[in-house]
Amino acid sequence: MDDRMFRTAMGKFATGVTVIASEVEGQVHGMTANAFMSVSLDPKLILISIDKKARMNEVVKQSNQFTVNILSGDQKEMSMIFAGQIKENKNIEFDTFEGLPVIENSLVSLACNVYQAHEAGDHTLYIGEVINLNVQDGEPLAFYEGKYMQMT
Ligand code: FAD
Image (cartoon, rainbow, N blue to C red):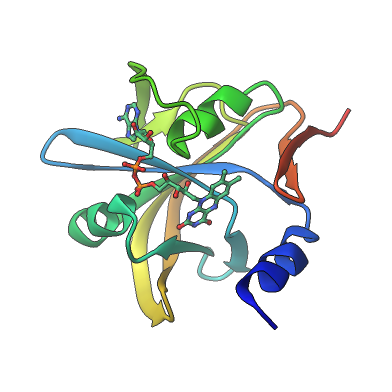
């Protein structure tokens, strides 16, 4: 099994798309992520997986807090910006929720404290305890076989 085959296999798992956001010393940093899942109802826990080489990993380690913003179908550009797929510098306005940066008009924004962090190969798994959340109506942005998709 080579890396390409592993990536191809994992790409067969259709997901939504999130932007993880956090702030250190007044600097907000965002990163697109689809490695996200719900973990526990009591306490309310979620999990994200961040590449150890990503700048986001250092930011979350330092701030010990982050938000997960589940993107809606019309937020593909946001995903591309925070995945580095759109190169030109865009000035993104973040809203603030529970003192943390969130992406405006996301379907869901979860404000989390880091509950546990586990090293797993070349990624760090962050389990977040959800301290509050916001939900809006709408359709999600989806990702499948390396391509963005709309549900409708
Ligand atoms: P950078 O590459 O420096 O930043 C990412 C981009 O966000 C840059 O273009 C930067 O300019 C922009 N940016 C950051 N903060 C701001 C701001 N405040 N204002 C304006 N622009 C800003 N990687 C994972 O580790 N885990 C995953 O689960 C994951 N899932 C992914 C899912 C999808 C659908 C895609 C497309 C990519 C995914 N990636 C994932 C890859 C990851 O999004 C990229 O590798 C990303 O570039 C890594 O970000 P970074 O923290 O290293 O920072």
